[in-house]
Length: 215
Ligand SMILES: [Mg+2]
Image (tube, rainbow, N blue to C red; front, side, top):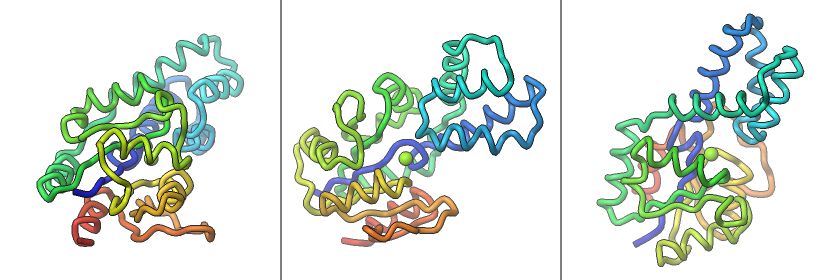
């Protein structure tokens, strides 16, 4: 039985869509021009930036008097509320499991937030386990976090695949431990020359199909 490692945000759940929806609504509410959306998306950097930095950025740019902590709570709450597990994604995970794959999420983020995403969406029921960087004490692409994922599932990394959207964290991380990978391009071109994904796919369902076809 091989391991199927998966990123959480923007792989199994549409975090970018949830953030964009909140950001559009927020800018409208404070009377900011709609074209500021691009600025706000760049500050968020696809969730790579800390929510505290996003809050501070907003407070400075619009001279908001809302305390940063309230803004942070709003952003996190809104993202959580808007995240849904697509039934097709759930179905793809179930099919992979039926075919003998052991799905384990490997995600960079805060334990409380990431676990809430897993449980609220019901994604936890489709996973054998998960590793969150905060509780693991190490982040992707560090090889150690992939080793921890294998340990949790009591499996080896040999024969595993990694599916993810981040070139460095997911694909670079997988390459670092000799694991094959599928990169979710999300409309981007591959530009990294130090490593490359084994396959590229449009979304997680196509990516799971690629992995199943590999055996
Ligand atoms: Mg991701």
